[in-house]
Length: 313
Ligand code: BDR
Ligand code: CA
Image 1 (cartoon, rainbow, N blue to C red):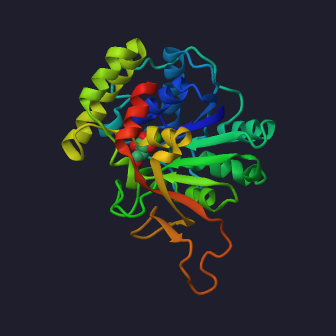
Image 2: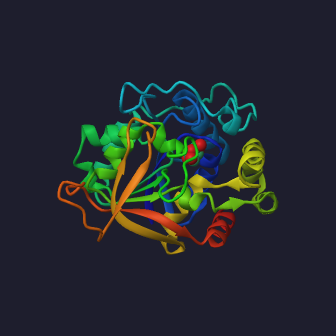
């Protein structure tokens, strides 16, 4: 059984990923931590509580503090065209949800939970990396206690989606992402190289609703705005970015990876770009010699991943 803390900014594709984690029989979802990104942290936290209530999820929700790791990067605007004014596709989520938020802030929840479960916790982070970076700053030893970290973010051999160089989750807090990528824990990055190939058609989503009942119906209602946006601008269907990261946990054999140190650019025209120095390539000394080799996904069996997601939902 995989013990998972899900660090998320719900967010429409985040909602699908959350339902996947909740339903998968080999996953024990032990915490949900919220971060800004698709909306403010107040809104993403409200949305996490809403989904927890609607889908009867037991895991506690701990709220991030809404700040980027670099205090100069105050988050100010949200992708309302993609995720809606409410972050969940303009379905009129109630303003408040009558469920408690965990008393610990997100980064502290991560630290405490990891310390209580040494070697057992997988962190799946599908928003800005701020909470993970703050956790590492306060308690660097958690890097040796976490089982693995799986990230949705970055773009290595393909263009970004928020700038030509950068993917949105990394671009929103690049300094945090660099801290996370260079820490001595095992990181696998599931980025645009593979997620952009993983597109759920309306037909498949409709089939999921037919078998999945009320929970799947809510997911479908939430997803329509997102599908319309992607249909107009990118791909005809739902790009299931965040669910790909969750699928990697239970079916890594459906992905190919490349290993090497990963760094994140901060500043300039490539702000937020992810760069990997492939293992085995020689460079003069001083080129990121002191950082651990991490794993970037470069290939995916998209049909099999979509099938896994559909069956789980
Ligand atoms: C990522 O950005 C967010 O909009 C999505 O939820 C996903 O995590 C894709 O770039
Ligand atoms: Ca997300």
